[in-house]
Image 1 (tube, one colour):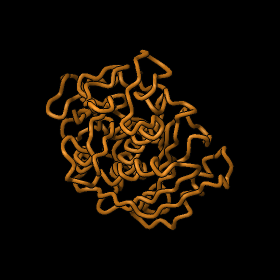
Image 2 (cartoon, rainbow, N blue to C red):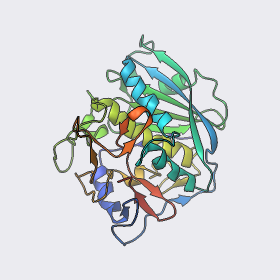
Image 3 (tube, rainbow, N blue to C red):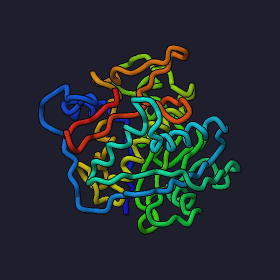
Image 4 (spheres, rainbow, N blue to C red):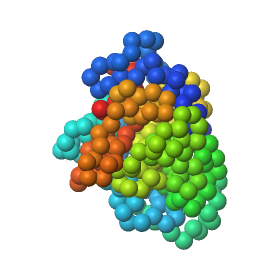
Amino acid sequence: MASRSLTLPLFFLLFILFSSSISSSSAALVQQQPLVLKYHHGTLLKGNITVDLVWYGRFTPTQRSVIVDFIRSLGYPRSPPPSAASWWRTTEKYKSGSSNLVVGRQAVHEAYTLGKSLKNRHLRALAGKFNAAPGTITVVLTAADVAVEGFCSRCGTHGAARPGSAFVWVGNSETQCPGQCAWPFHQPMYGPQTPPLVAPSGDVGVDGMVINLATLLAGAVTNPFGGGFFQGPADAPLEAVSACTGIYGSGAYPGYPGQLLVDKATGASYNAHGLGGRKFLLPAMWDPTTYACKTLV
């Protein structure tokens, strides 16, 4: 099964194509041709889903805690609104039924045993360290000093792993291509040049990883094996979140992420509350009931 990549260098072009389908959490801003992700009659990931994490390269404890807390926040209903959990609940509208993510095993590879320049086969090998059961998502996260085949022309990828399980890879782009994979926390490489936003955790690379991980986790549960919800070719699909690239708040347009909340103490921009007072910036997700990209704010 071919992997589906999160490719962002052309996000402004995609944004222009699909900006007609932007909506806020309460109502559509524009009434034009709806954005439709077709269901291809394949299996989706529903029920309790274990998310195993493979850390390749050196991540600080703080960096790891941001990622882990984000995943846990997706199933934490007691965060104040707007919450990461309410963002994730949109996935329940894809053929009904919840996808409950639970953080499972974690493996830390700080010795760079495969070197600092990885091929796709290396990512698969790292994911294969866990004997993933059906209904499991194995996430490989690569550190900022690790180059990955195709990185920067894509910010991550997901696809099928063992039978019934999924695989996700996300890299830290801070020193390689933050303008492509950590926008809007860094000036974009292409398109309108606007000042970058302050990252909620104070770490541009990790907060960029949160955005891309959110995108790929949503894709992994709504189109895990290539027969779920997507638009376009199966080997380069627009999925639940990648169909809404560049949209974070109401009023978004190319180069402007939209109206967001701002932390008065740090100046950081965010749109979702999470576990333990965490704040995250999460991209819009396509809502199957409104045929529009839904934002939290």
